[in-house]
Amino acid sequence: MRLTSFTDYALRVLMYAAAHNDRLATIEETARAYGVSRAHLMKIVNQLTRAGLLRGVRGRTGGFELAQPPQRIRLGAVVRATEPDFALVECFGQRNSCVITARCRLSGVLQEALDSFLRTLDRYTLADLALDPASFGIALLPPEARAV
Image (tube, rainbow, N blue to C red; front, side, top):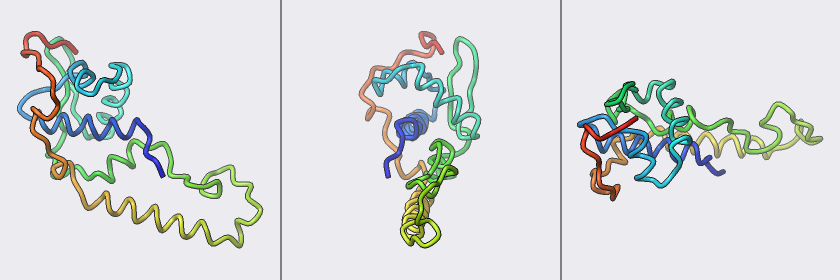
């Protein structure tokens, strides 16, 4: 199994927001910190806001922050909110045309593995991933110079 880059960066955005919990973070500075496009991060921040994980503030001095304390944000919930599906094999999807589905035992084994994966992520929170702001290695703009 491989997480999408969307989920990967969603986790990174949350880590960035948690590290800068004393102020609003911006999409621009987060994009610079990770070296990714602003447009891609905008989609991610919007999704995380709709999922109730981030709170966005509009305007020239706006940005985003965690919508709840990092110790309440379970990694499994983030992955469930950002991954498009968990169809590890064809028979997990809606367009299953596998001829052995009725007798196959592979789907049960893979479902057990997926459940274990998500249960493991559910044991950890964003607080478990906490980093110091300096870990991101960028020079931050002063609040008056930040743009959304």
